[in-house]
Image 1 (cartoon, one colour):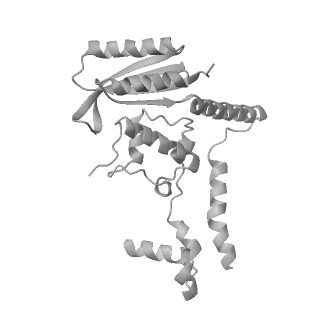
Image 2 (cartoon, rainbow over the protein chains, first blue to last red):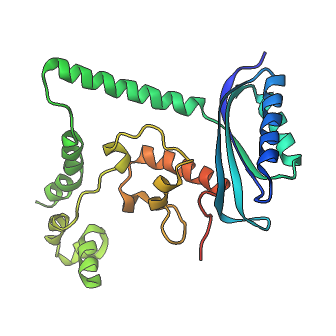
Image 3 (spheres, rainbow over the protein chains, first blue to last red):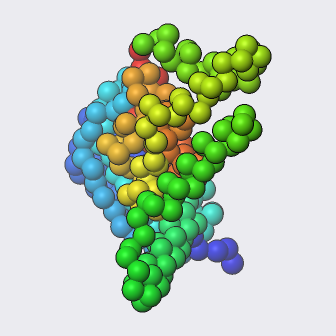
Length: 147
Length: 100
C-alpha cells in the first residue's frame, strides 16, 4: 500500500471555457481522487486572471486550485488525464506536506523559545542577537589583520 | 557617484589596493553601507507561498530575473525557499520567465 501524501494541483483552463465546464472538470478531478483512495482537502477557484506570459495563443485563463491527500499513483493518473484534456492549458502538481511540516516545526520551536524567555521574565527577542553577530563578522576581521 | 563606489571597492579586493598602501580606506567603507536584513526573518515567514505573486514580485525586478541575495539581503535559507517559490509561480504563469 502506497503512502498518503498532501499534494496541491493548480490548473489553468483556456479563457473561453464556461463556468459549467470548469465545474465539470472539477468533478472529474474529484472522481479520480475518490477512485484511487484519495481525499479532497480544499478547492479554490481563482477565476479569470491575466497570464504573465502567453501559453499557446492565450493571454488569460481560469485558475483552479485543488488540495488533496493521495498516493503517487493518483498524481500520475491525474497528470495523464490533465495532459490529454484540451480545456486545460497548463497544470502543475506539487507535493507540499514536507514543506508544511518544516514550516510548522519552525513555528513551534520559535513559539517554545518565546515562551521560555517569557517564563524567565526577559523581554521578547528582537533583532539584537542577529545584528551583533553580523557586525562582528564584517568589521573586526580586516581591522585586526591590518593593525 | 560611480567613482566613489570604485574607490570603496578597491581596498576590499585584496589585489592592487593593498600593494599600494592605501589600506586605511578598508575599515572605513562600512560607514556608508546600511546593513541589510532578511525580510523573511524579520517578518518570521515560515512558508514562502508560490501562489502569492504579489509577495514574490519585489524579488523579480524588470527583466524578471531572480534578485540575488547580495542585493536583497535575504538569508541563504529563505533565498532557497524563495527560489523554488518563484520557479513554481513561473510555471503556472503567475510570474514571467522573461520580459523585454
